[in-house]
Amino acid sequence: MPRRPIPAITEFPVSDRDAGPYGITRGPDDALWFTLVHHGRIGRVTTEGEVTSYPLELPSGGPSIITTGPDGALWFTEFRGHRIGRITTTGDITSFPLPTPDAGPFGITRGPDDALWFTEANADRIGRITPDGHVTEFPLPLSEGFPSAIAAGPGGRLWFTLNRANAIGAIGQDGHVALHPLPTPDSAPVGITAGSDGALWLVEIGAGRIGRITPDAEIDEFALPDPAARPHAIVADTDGNCWFTEWGANRVGRITVHGRIEEYDLPSPASEPHGIAVGPDGAVWTALEIGTVARLTLR
Image 1 (cartoon, rainbow, N blue to C red):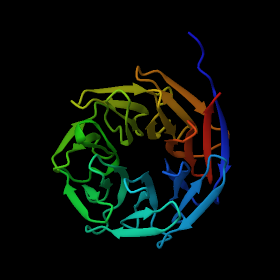
Image 2 (image 1 turned 60 degrees about the horizontal axis):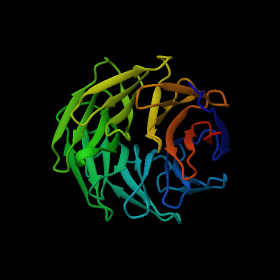
Image 3 (image 1 turned 45 degrees about the horizontal axis):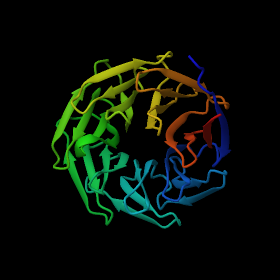
């Protein structure tokens, strides 16, 4: 079997070391946009490494996950500020407080209805916000589940991880919720993404596994070589694979639809990789809490 190419890895400094680059996504302007969770800023880096950042109203708001919306702007959660934020590609920022106090919004994604759907980790709710700022909240049928990441999946449903409930949830646009327990105890799922195979792929930070769940809730799990790797975020590429960060092991990994896993060490020690995205250049980009963004390019 031919050997797969090893990525070339380049790191771009984007902030002070204590700013905490966290979530990252490809923007509508073909730049990478990221959150600075500890400094209350939104950053932008081009594929050539040019960096800009924009301050939020609340420096302590904790911007976490960021995604491109249906309106050509970037939308993000403020976990400690209990808001949903919007930033245009020219840096204009709008903020939308949530109806539920101390909701703790974390994951966010564009839904099939051209609204943004998000998780409320502290309130056991899934939220929906339209581009004009109208918010609807849907309560979940459990308590202290800590809904985390969220992704749009087949059939018009949104799929989300329940970090403290060891389960995956799916919500329809009518608010109907189905919960699916994971086989491995204390797996603590976080990131989730829609794969090219019609299933949802997720990371289990507590169990050191990659999970796969089909629309009819059939679940497979794939153990990482290092059970203490603490996989955190995951994204699907255009070749049918999924890429994920290993926060506890200072690596980025790739898994095929058949469950084959490959891992790549990051050059800076203890860089704490969090968010991950596929860029306009076809490379994989990951936000490192040490104040850099890394690009992995297949040679």
